[in-house]
Length: 338
Image (cartoon, rainbow, N blue to C red; front, side, top):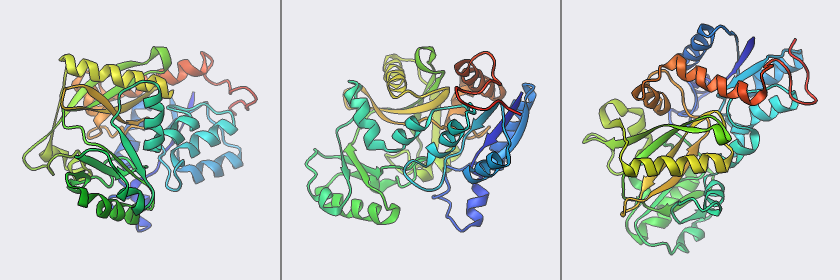
């Protein structure tokens, strides 16, 4: 069975002049090597494809695969994570992880929270700020938390994100609008424990891999799981699997959101508790990082006793189950692998 591998290599974009923060969601050669080694170790033939433009070129050339292992985040547009899956759907080629609708929705944090809220899953009250005037009109109680609406990996999050005074709201939002050229999500700050929940599987078969508590150390930027804290997590952050009642409730909230949003195969959902210890949905990462050493999902799997090759195998098994027992058959109307 031949598996294509789609991804965005961080080094490629750094060479184009993008900065470290802007490329934080893209993958290192270590990640690509690790995935390829795990898939090859499971007996699959792996072909590296790369980003969406490389995929498009190969499809036009007539290249096909039995399945694509997709971790491409995309570079441009609010629906950038949906580009590779949409192209694969057009050619009837199955792939790992969520479909274009889910990936387009979940990169838009405010839209995602609206869906989650409509499904009666707890999430903090919020406002989407598109202009400085929107920021001036916010009447949510303090403290608040501000971040770019369509970024991941802690991009745009730092000590400035926690707003404790009214006069901070407009200048922080104005700065984020100017820097990231996208709306700013401003939500009620949740002061309780912080968890990230790993999920494996799709629909009714989805299950919680583990609930990992995130605790900031003395060297960390205070109060926020920020971009810089994530980048230097070895010295700033500690992780542990949590199994107490509050952690179990966090897992239940995450699983409900995972199913409500239609996420597939594997990913993470960030949860934070309010002052009463009630877990709330924060955001979902349906294309969670899978660096063999430093990604949260991999750290969580390791703490739960699941090796890296076993994690990759579980992700692939979920995808193959979704597309049927004859994994080389295309989706309806598609073209068989050559």
